[in-house]
Image 1 (cartoon, rainbow, N blue to C red):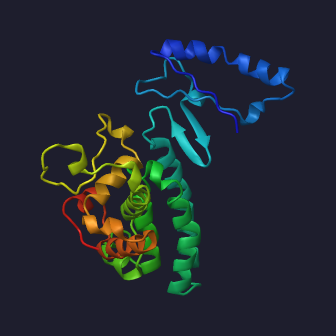
Image 2 (cartoon, one colour):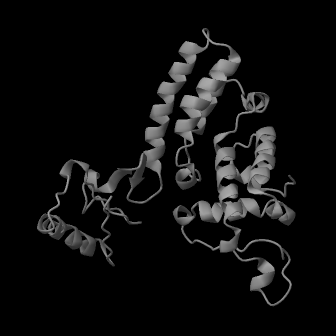
Image 3 (cartoon, one colour):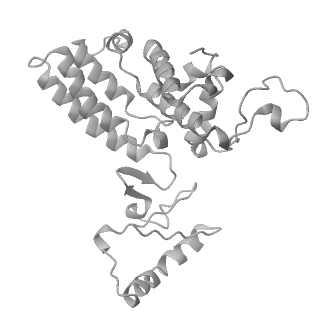
Length: 259
């Protein structure tokens, strides 16, 4: 897979760079290679509105099953994911009267959650397919359209979408602890939260990826948890998330948890 990145101080500079992309084709041709136009995509990444200089084709692109948009706010990906998961809810509804509860859960994990959780480290902090997930749980639990399904998440031991993101982000941070610094190592004085991991502050919310959120989630757990093996840490944290069934990341960040 070949990628070429253009960088400019303004949108007009990026447009000029994009127009010069024919040089890439010439380089491939001179080296006995060919560019597959049907599988080639161009994408502008900017915090500004690019509609004036880029068509819709240049504002979105699908990469390894994840839809990227020019602002990286994951709106397009979450929209496409919701549509796909909605069709899977229909599948669950058709199977409800034909399969046992355990078999329905196997179908849910195999078809629904595997699709919903794909690439969640990238887009999990944005508004995703949580509403569609609630519909799937209501189908499995045989609830009404507007019935509360929080207790069913706990009873069925199914992780909510925010809980899945918390689990994957915290486990990623736990597996890469050597990349981070502890508060007491950074400050000369004794800070209030000496054992907390330092967080790289991001001015823009969309720039706060799983590296940022993973550390925030990890700081909500006792420092002694970092010494646990990765498998044990994941199992303990998953047990907490299953029993609490968080509907948002903010619920988890409100207090300190013990696992």
